[in-house]
Amino acid sequence: MKRTKVTLLGLLLALGLVVQYLPTDARALNSTRVPLLVSDVVVPLVEQVGAIGMTVSDMDASVDFYSRVLSFEKVSDVEVTGEDYERLQGVFGLRMRVVRLRLGDEFIELTEYLAPKGRPVPLDSRSNDRWFQHIAIITSDMDKAYSLLRQNKVEHASTGPQRLPDWNKNAGGIKAFYFRDPDKHWLEVLQFPAGKGDQKWQKKDKLFLGIDHTAIVVGDTEASLKFYRDVLGLHIAGTSENYGTEQEHLNNVFGARLRITSLRAGSGGPGIEFLEYLAPRDGRPVPADARAPDLFHWQTSLIVNTADSFAKRLLAENSRLVSPGVVSLNDKSLGFSKGLLARDPDGHVMALIER
Image (cartoon, helix red, strand yellow):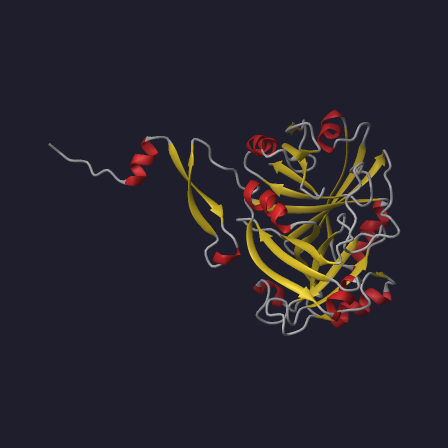
């Protein structure tokens, strides 16, 4: 009689078990996936971080700023309304104009609410308030970039470009500068020294190359990791602790000491970076009544294979949903067919979209 060799994997498959790879933590950065046996259910993972979105008050003025000053290129310009979008965004009676812009391989989405209008960014906003979010635009030459921004009279958020000190192994040599767009959204221009960052950021053919990451202020890194790593499946790509006069003047927060954690999705896209202020601890929370038309609203698109699986997982983890559940769209004007919006532990909005 012919004998059949039974392997452990074959036995597991026969029993209906699956092998799923989940992100690991910073102690195993050289191996970003470790096997985990999951019974019956495959834990969903975010495939890619997509466009980073923000609400603007005057679309034409914002498009002019991002294209003329920062070299973004317009990809699409659409206007949408209807019950599907109301349910998706959690806003009744909306009409949105959405413009998609590209810089290098990355995208941003600007949304103007023609109805209803929202609130401006609070005048006394600080970089350690938890509604803080920015995009990090990579430049090939900080001096030229700063000169161009000065010529266009941008509002400073930093006192000027800062070079992070060499004692900081993970961040030393990086040059960075915070400024504001016409609606007072925080933006960063950042230059990596040789040997740091993605190799594509070493190109010199353009002044502005693309978007490396979006940064968000969090109150508790571990709580945020439970959401982004354990629920959404992003993996830690790097960590550092930044402090000193350079960091204080970059963030324009006296005594700033930050725990920084960078996360990435398995198939690419910009990173999501946590900024936890170890000091000072007086950053204010996102207003409880914050809504998408408010100009301090950002939403980061996370591309997923099955939105329904994520909805179930988010509900099981008691995550806060903006949408009532997964919303199927009658058209694909915005480039996806299904999606839902959810808030992280600090109130930042993630749009999980299924193409």
